[in-house]
Length: 330
Image (cartoon, rainbow, N blue to C red; front, side, top):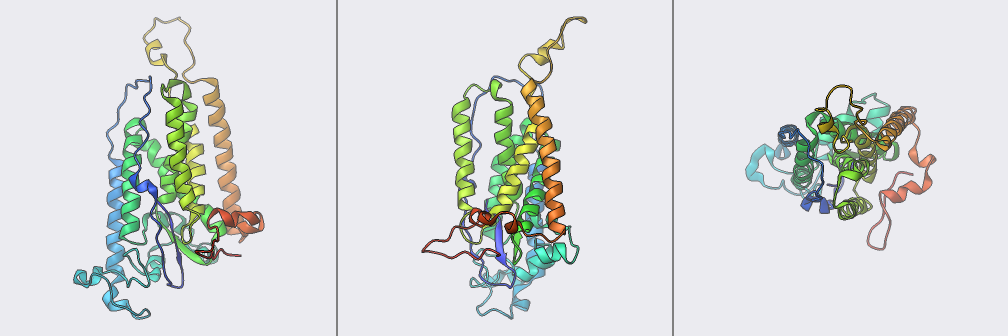
């Protein structure tokens, strides 16, 4: 599920596959029996849209015609103009950095100095290669379909899109010299929403501890993968935080027995639909979400660097070791 951070000059792009590719949502039994069970159609549409955008990107890329700057032959030349860039340039089996930039990849200079704020959204639908695309789409299917079946397409669609946007904003605050593409910010938003949904609806679950531990392990593993080079962990973190807050706002379930109370005779005192802590968490999360996104956007378009306010944050996206070096923007 890793968001790809590519060198804008068209250099080598490396891939670190996430354990999320094999993810399946934790099966935590609960005592709540909702009257509504949704049919998932939006998540499959998102998958189709991502694949379609990738095909269009490869068509525009046209490696056999445009592969001039790099040595090496296009990969899978039998695909014609859909063949991939040389492995030296893009080992993920995908287009060039210049093509991704043309298609709407996230790049700080374009967003801030050229007033192309739309890149904060378009980058969510682009992928660096077939491997990147498959990993993210498998994760989206495993996570998103179940959530949409439980909560409906409107809520899950909002969480997916706003989380992806939030991840792009945080990424732009810290990464200036590289382009970034991928849906993983939105996917981490779904993970964050799963966590907040579990917390706010804690009382209805019967296997709480195991569900929480399983979900936390999955989140930690995927965020941990983000500290490897050439992975945009800021998009992951931003998407996760936005999704976490949106989960508290959009995903609280009515307390147990409330649905049955609606059938009682008029005049009988009824319980509140939601518990007090659900209201409190929802209101606080809404305030934090609005304040956080507003502050981040103001900082971004004023040209401020995230590292000027958080020097240690560079270790959130890459930790240097004897095996590799980090190229964080200073």
